[in-house]
Length: 177
Image (cartoon, rainbow, N blue to C red; front, top):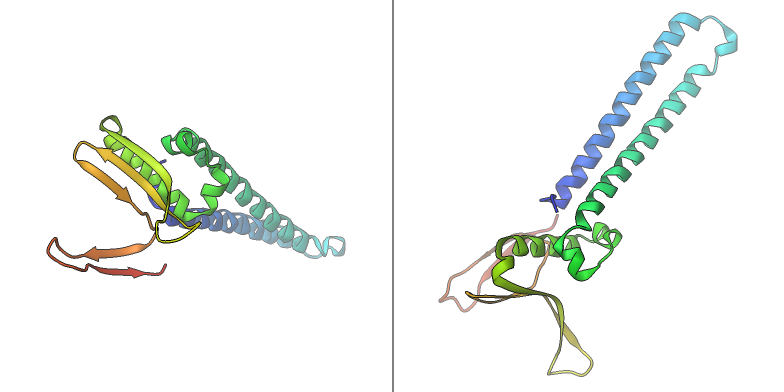
């Protein structure tokens, strides 16, 4: 998966959509100015500038939707070739909507890229809880590597964790985005 930051991609989509609508709007204003200069005194073309403006706005939004759909298909194609998809078979439509799943897929693919040959990586393990009936815990990623066993609980939250090996408690700070 080529996307490093899901939120950045969304910002990029919004910016490209805005630029397309802006360019089409400028073109429509140019057409209206040309119309006014050429046909301004003729009564039979009275509603034409308004119709042209509505048409160009509708065309702009249609083009934006088409561009978004093409990007969606591009990333879906990339995702369906990823190790995460081959392992989990989660549909891209679910991954696309859920930032937590997307983050899990990103981390898994990075781990496969970095340690794939020397490790065994398991996803979404369901573990029954000993202290209760019919309750379970989930381990997002469990990695067995020659350097140790790594149990990962992933959260798509920006922030920090600090402490040291002698601290009984570590401090966590995060910000809501």
